[in-house]
Length: 209
Ligand code: OGA
Ligand code: MN
Image (cartoon, rainbow, N blue to C red; front, side, top):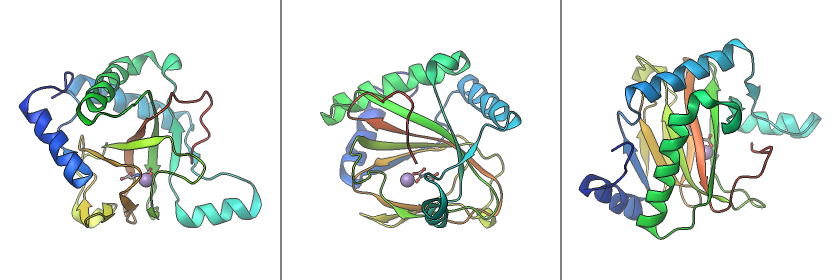
């Protein structure tokens, strides 16, 4: 489907998304794009750029770490020309979804996420109280040889229950406002490229959690 997001298969995906609020697409990125994403992720790790996905000092920080225990690094396109082909694809994806679903989608934001052994993310929606900009969540998993016993599945609770294993180059997309979801405890390091298609352009210096 990459990089055009057109045609009958794509229309079927969008029909399914409209009905079920999520879709799963395996072998999502073409191999050259997948390789550049994995290579970039490795350099981010080597430079120790992943930060605990928590905000605020003291008590607030503790509270958040009870909800999620992953580490993230936000992408910033102008600083990352190596990821141009990925961002080009996301531009096309965003336009294609906007057209198919009659949505206004004028931006996106992405981060790398790493769940060390034992990490999780408790049930939540991706739209926050005071930040209603996130329309559609997009997660691309980057885990070679992931096995069921490694846990770390994405569990969708609502509208329907569903378990999705985080296998290499699987993409899951779901509505940020309706799909209650969690990341079950990972028993192995679990990596993903996670993002959101936004109603309004992303602000500079994203303050996401
Ligand atoms: C998130 C999230 C799901 C996943 O980062 O908000 O729910 O499977 N991620 O990594
Ligand atoms: Mn989420």
